[in-house]
Image (cartoon, rainbow, N blue to C red; front, side, top):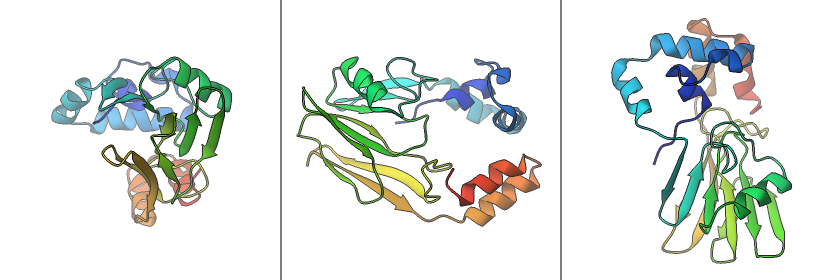
Length: 186
């Protein structure tokens, strides 16, 4: 399942690029010029929210599917309480999180590689992190494996050729800060 996010919507013209900071705006403008029609057509089919297999998915959060960052326990709890699915998946912050709600207490937080979640123990808000730009200090690509049959979720990391990605960013004339941050995971 794929969702669109704020950068996708900017590339499509649904969000004004002026809503982005300097480097992010430069990246969105570059992508707009580089994106082919088949890729644009695919992006136009996506939504910033969806439901699937007992989960509600949001690029941002249930409060704002595009722009809201879930980075605090308060916002995580509000997001859980505004939904009904056992699992709420969010993104946008690029930070891997696993927060559980048992009906009276919120527990969890940052979810480094190897964090395992027993999905049968209450409701969960999960953020897999980011494949392309993790912002939690770990530059490896972050992803989340959910096994619905076993009722488990596992946070994973994988190395990727960061230096090649940095070179491609620089070759295309994008801001150097976008390349430099990849090695630091920020």
